[in-house]
Image (cartoon, rainbow, N blue to C red):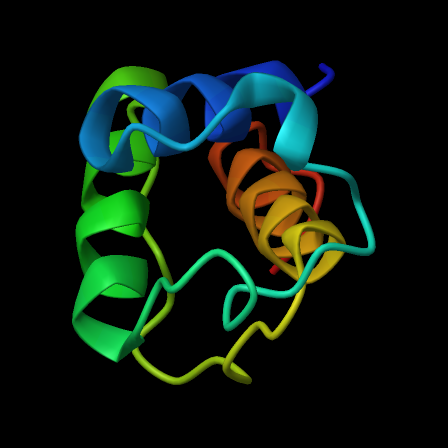
Length: 82
């Protein structure tokens, strides 16, 4: 599943970030998404996809990092990872 559109839509809806401003290498800092914003973003993605973030995960710094985290959450949900 391509999670980028979900992440981009959540950023656009929550923070009014232009869709074309979000690329995989874009940093959360450049989008002015702080740690609280990241948590809110992850909650929205969790709700939308029915997944849960692990208790302890490396803090994403780019959109690609967020996508990788979401992909790992999906893999756990689908039983493909521990």
